[in-house]
Image 1 (spheres, rainbow, N blue to C red):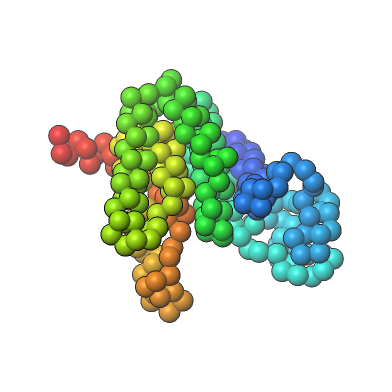
Image 2 (cartoon, protein in one colour):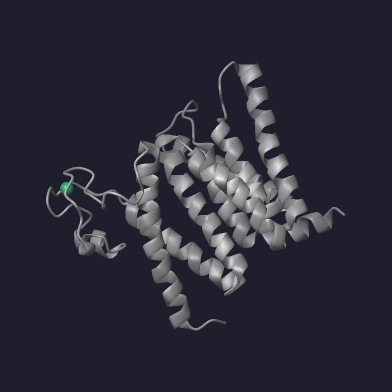
Length: 256
Ligand SMILES: [Zn+2]
């Protein structure tokens, strides 16, 4: 078991990375640079100083408002930072100080950004998914799940959704799934292999149905309200990457 200081360091590092992922999720859909200029208040445009930029702490200290214009700052920012830190800690506790942890954290960062951009803009930027497919495949060549499982995962992940998208389009005459979802699931397959990409689909459908049911029950979304599927694929992939291996072993062992 790693000591508490080690875990705390990973958590703080996760908070800081989460802060950067917020910048990426905000700027990528607007096609802005993620390194320049420095962070600004999205309402009044004032450049933020270092003490406005402390993950979670600045937001809490300012009661979720900009110090200058007093406009509210979305709770999504600290939420993304906390979730990133939590995923970093759980991944570290699961895989320890290994190269696989590093790869899984890079993968998780991509998923967090895609979760936010799909939720807020219904966009899954190609600048993340396409390099993600390549990086996932290369890393899997010398780490679990191995190149063969990765390649099959990539092809069935992307191919499965492509077939559904095509069928839906022919039946309904409108697009139900975007190509962004197809590329995202191909990326997930490349990183996690074929077993876990199937489990991702199960988790995504389950959390998607749950969220859809809750929305309808709360009267906030009708049957026609379209939930961004990529958001749930990202959630499903994080779950599968963290807890998927024992479940997949049990499930596929069961049917052999
Ligand atoms: Zn402001």
